[in-house]
Image (cartoon, rainbow, N blue to C red; front, side):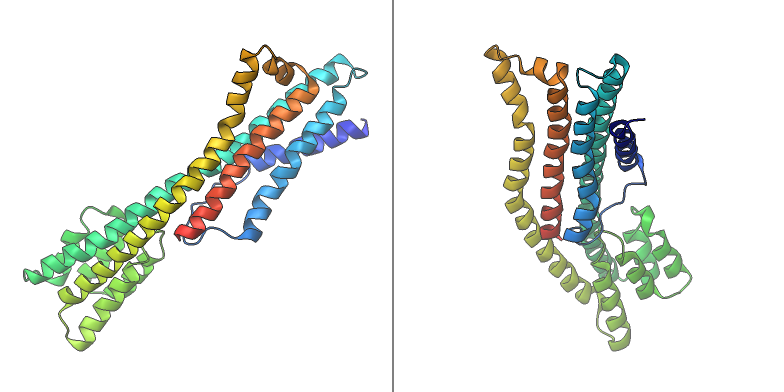
Length: 274
């Protein structure tokens, strides 16, 4: 096996491993770390262009026909695998952001519901059951309350989940009320107001970040408009991209790099929101 073929096989295996290896992780808390981002994106950033160059070398006119066909197939697989990996991470980030926002709203709703139930004279255990009836993920809190356990401790455990950091403030309010005799409903109202103000501030940050996010996505799809313009002028850019070795190399690398740019912007935006 020639050195080029060996390099091609090795880098192809690396690209497939990057695309398929390991379950996707959800985002919890501040998600942007330059070191983690570089460790995640740099292997793919290096692997796809190098695989492309190795495939181009294999597909030179002097190579056998089966080697040229194999090089094209590997090049297509490298581009598709890299694009699939980046798209999967983008989808996971979007779902995690949606779940985080839903949990933040649920914590505020819990404060309001608990305060209303307690003001109406409802026992604490029953108030928690009614307030948490629509949140199956909060079942540990219901069990702890029914058994007369440490409600504040259970709230702190739930606060470790994405978007539920406000439950730590609810736990502190629960403890302060139990020790000092203050009306828990009044304390919960203040906690709810504080969390609502924090959510409003976060919403302003999200609105401010919307234009950069939209710009990144627009730049990612802008080459498609360039291809359409070139085709309308008779330049045949699709023929060059799909029928030549250098064109396939540019296509695979360009798609992956454009998606990586969108993912990098999402990293930074998530950090600002957090």
